[in-house]
Image (cartoon, rainbow, N blue to C red; front, top):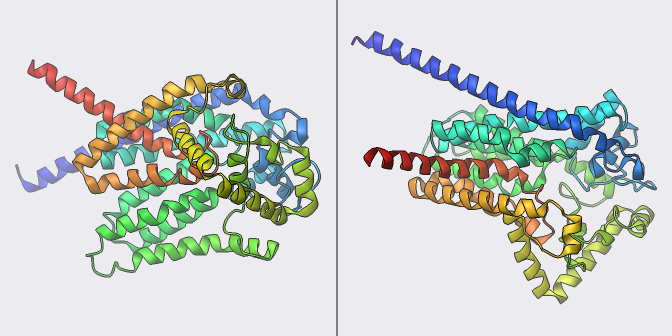
Length: 437
């Protein structure tokens, strides 16, 4: 066959493949979005409960967004008396929700539908990075199944339609960060590294926990491309772009509180409510402003930084005097994050009624994901490292403070990819065995 004809045939096949891929992703995203919007139609009214100044409408995110939209600044994370400026959470989602409030009204049905639909959209388009990550690390078959599995993944539907928090956006952005890191292995473009730094900065301002992952992903890419000429400075440049993006928020915190506050200042409070007292549950609501009026009054009276200083002292003293309890609760937090199991105590289960269903679901998906990760390590050790970084490093802060299954949701796309790869591998092996038989 002439070379020109071969080239045309290759281009035709490539175009057909791209069209097929585009159709697949369009259908996966549309089905995912339809499922999420269907749930939104049933649950949005739950956001309209007026109790505690519409507390359930976004919790801290909703109250800060309300303060922003009212012209009072990034402040007042709880209901009740004004608590002043805050850095309990990072700025991206409160400003998104504030824009929705300004457009659709405060705590209205339209605002509830808008934010839940937006979160549903973030969750639905996560099918796209899921597909390309799976295709890059495994094969096209795994990628197709993984995209569809994410579209119907129960936890993705649940967490994107029952909360106004940043979780669906953070999940989408972290998936894009990993997708970009994989793409950078084959890119010698400075522009691509600048884009990577920009993406990482937005992701960190959405969920600061990602900052524990980003340096490892960047170093992983840079190490593999270190032999390329003129690329030795790309990784630091991406880091500078990320730092430049988050710098204004750090400056705001310093000017507001007259001392350094790195991204968010909630760590002392999280350490306290996850470790001090209350062995029944994984958090102690009596030490949190949203669960105890006395704590809320103290926060409003002395201000956020003085309040958190007290919590820091209380938490550190408790951990220092009870290291065994801290260690044992940390082990239990690890188990909970990956299996959904905390306790079968009736008092606990009365508060967490979904746990009995979550335990088998999370345990099975975790086992499948670990099997998929093992297979990937066996096939390509280097390619498996980003998955290992994510699964090991991302949840560490929650092992020390307190867990919640919504906190590990940004890892769920990678759990789905790895679990799908294990199932596809078994399916292919079974087919081959049947043919041989």
